[in-house]
Length: 310
Ligand code: ZN
Image (cartoon, rainbow, N blue to C red; front, side):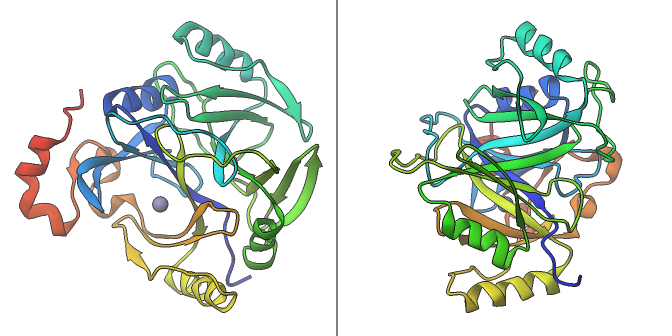
């Protein structure tokens, strides 16, 4: 039981306008704004983090809001849907909410015996709400989104692929997932290492034109490990299997390493440590512009350049 992938850690996507992105995920979706920082590889732009109260792995959705951004195109080689778990019976609330707020959505449907609905964020990013009867996670709530309807965190991520075989092998042979269901061309994999945020769905789309990652696209999918030693175990395992894996990179709130899975999706393995309270107390998460140490001396210039958030 030592070295296990503990489901999803975070999912990172590309947005356009920063304020619009902030408004959607806090006001409409009712997520907690966990962290306002910059893209560590491009400190002239923001990096936003949304999730539950403390930024628990499996609830963390992050964005690079890149301003004027061409929209991407969903297709093979990409993560194409971000699935959230919501309480049983809550889809009617969400449907009405999306209707009232002018959000594009599809009527509920069913797959793998679960009721779900899909919708689009303002940049065209596709999300999904799946009703789950007994998700034990404590939700973050907002004025219009109470505990009886609030998202619990991730339910699954969907990858669309020209050929699912090699990606499936990474999930089963490296990450410890198993095939648990098939619905037409959709294959559901899950790990029994934990009970939530533990599903990856692979959609086979042979012959479709490859997707283009830009505005409204998922940038990468991060899987969770408990600590640095486990991360290094997976690094060695991936290297042995011939993958090119980055060294460990310090992202302040977790330690990251990246590799591209054979289907073309950028995967990350991220640690639980040290977490979001490393530079702000729990009650103040998301209320300051946090910069990593290497950019602190340029704070005034960076602040002047970033869009004002109200
Ligand atoms: Zn990441």
